[in-house]
Length: 238
Ligand SMILES: *C/C=C(C)/C=C/C=C(C)/C=C/C1=C(C)CCCC1(C)C
Image (tube, rainbow, N blue to C red):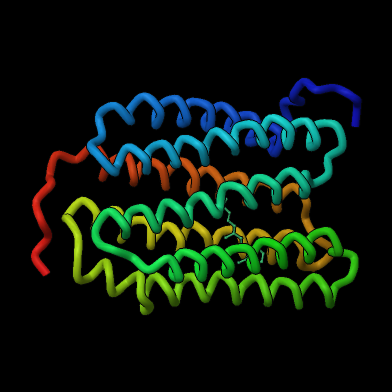
């Protein structure tokens, strides 16, 4: 691997790092400027969406360099980014629920702790990937954290609040975010499995994680933007 920060045209992983860096910057400006068109509490939701893509943009610049220089996974930058952006997305969920009704803060803390368990276990698994049993035990712990979040938003307190209260725009946003956390977030554990099974595939791991970040940060923000700028402020029928 030659020591260059320029992109090699056959370095497809590097190209995805580059494309997503640019997309994160553009999304950040977009959510920031569009904040003006949103009303009331939705403004904060758009601010948080811009924070998520802005933090990711910074990490993508560095991750791209690590990859281009070393052809290794930028695991530390990746998880520092997730450690900041995943809790912000939990805040986003909570803000949408709180905009509909009074929500107990206990819900927020349960979601936050579950997301931290998921990320810390995943990080420890990846940095100890040479130890196969640690790799998969920690994966299972991380998976449990994610399944708990799914339980909470589909069957727990968060889902009950959403079903009973709120505006049409709020419910739409909540339902869309819930689908992202189910199907969009599922790309990450699949990337982990694919990236570490049978000797591992570091290029596939990074392409899959990059694709997942594109979906889960930008599409996540777009869903919030759509709800925030929709003119339909009617109260939902319950
Ligand atoms: C913006 C970044 C986001 C939304 C990152 C999300 C990351 C995950 C949903 C990671 C999930 C994982 C598991 C469910 C099992 C353990 C391995 C992880 C950390 C990749």
